[in-house]
Length: 412
Image (cartoon, rainbow, N blue to C red):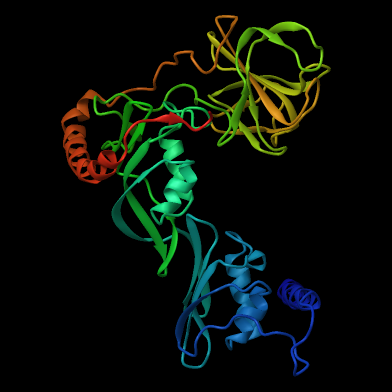
């Protein structure tokens, strides 16, 4: 019998604690108000920077008992005392200010809802409902992919999305050239009328250093989804081209290099990526961690064995990723550490190395096999999707391709 009272006291205490950090009071001596929806039985708004669930609902006329009932009903799915500024909420009130329905955006993909049934709330987790707008975009690279995306009026996230789609065929750290261009069929997502990122691209093309790369998004009837080349081969390979995003190569693979600290000529059997301390380093492929520790030369380093043929190494890290230790399995794209300058190092960078059949290989040139192609059972359906996407891409890419002539390295 004491649990509801205790929870109510906790909610009130949380609200008082939040108020104590709100800073200067208003001119009338009262604390600044919490976000409040319009005076309407059904309304929606964003959580304010100082809102608690208690303050937010009480400001909209909901009784303390109703707040308690809502928090208890949702507790098994999500703790509403952890609501975050900038996330949407929506509420519906009855004529006598009783809460009828409440929804809150937990993250980019899910929301929690609670609806009144008789005298109790029934809560559930649900996928976040997006509005979408399909459109096309094209741009030319003059200095960086980020700037190229922004120049055509798109959010910088699109640069990351393009880099992810073509991550197995283009190393965006070293391969970009002035005069490269991209074209894409995109889906802008909206939550309650506001831009909220992008859905999967239906298709994209990236012209890089004289080569045209094409990606077709295809989801087969069994639910498997991937990006494929027009011939049905998966763009996804066993390994990413790079363990970092948007850095520069400061030293390449060599059997004879003057070591910057030891001042002697010795092999450099990896690729150095210069990047700020703390830049995330990801596993280039699925595998098992053989070692995550410290060595006098390598500093903090991680060694991942992918299969009987390939092993990769990540040296001079500032720290390791969460849970990364010898014996754990990692997936392609998992953060396994962060750029640092530990061991024999002259500055922040990642020394990335790869072994193929027990011998060191140049990560920038080694050929890596692709993932599975389109299932032959669904070839005809893939061809229909492919032909439609290619037809629409041709109209988008034609203009930017005709304006772009020649190519020169952005790193020269």
